[in-house]
Picture 1 (cartoon, rainbow, N blue to C red):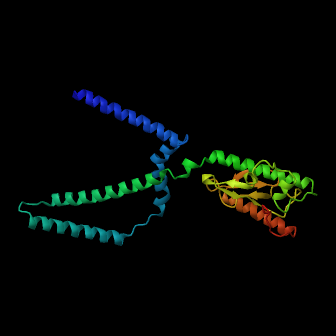
Picture 2: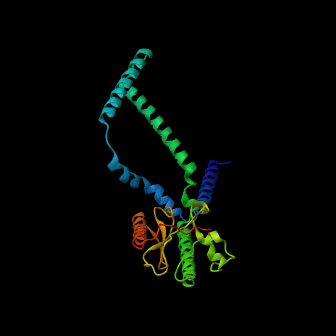
Picture 3: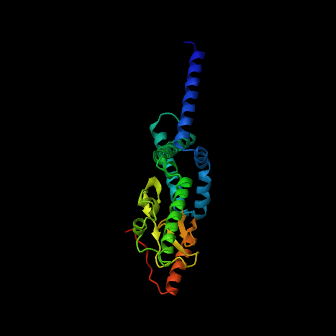
Length: 263
């Protein structure tokens, strides 16, 4: 086979493989290929921005390392000069030591790259669609609050003692799984019960929280539902401020700090 034909086949095979890899990556990335590539290309900038101000220099350790390097260089030069019959220059020893450090550094870097690649597809970005799941969490929380307010309108403005009561009175659809509305969606489709705050009634201030996720579900943000039926994602600062406002209202109205259980 002519050399040109072999080169053409090699390039054609490499091109085909690259195209297939691109399609596979785009499929696994679930529409976030550009975001992933951007993070890979620029993530080190953010890392330096976060860690550089915290970096401190241990000049003692640096001095010791420098002395060890000089001793190692001198020892290698002496051994090479005494063992080899040819004249061995300092430049060769320096290059030899530099090559050793480069090999060790490359090996360490390669092991880290392999380690991170092995864990790369376990990252939440591949199995957790934050936009879709946050929309579902907000929608489910709003439906549950609406069900609570419907119950309150038939019971002198008071909310139920248990969320299961909403099913018994057929305010929630019996055909829909109970946990769909009473649980928040976490990563890997795991679920966690909402924290439904007690002590409130439908005449309490609308800005008080009535429902919240016990932990952040979307980055550092909590799902927070209010007594006016609004639901949003809030920062930890707003979350703790809302909980403090609820506790202050309970104290002002001489009510205990309770939550409404599932059953």
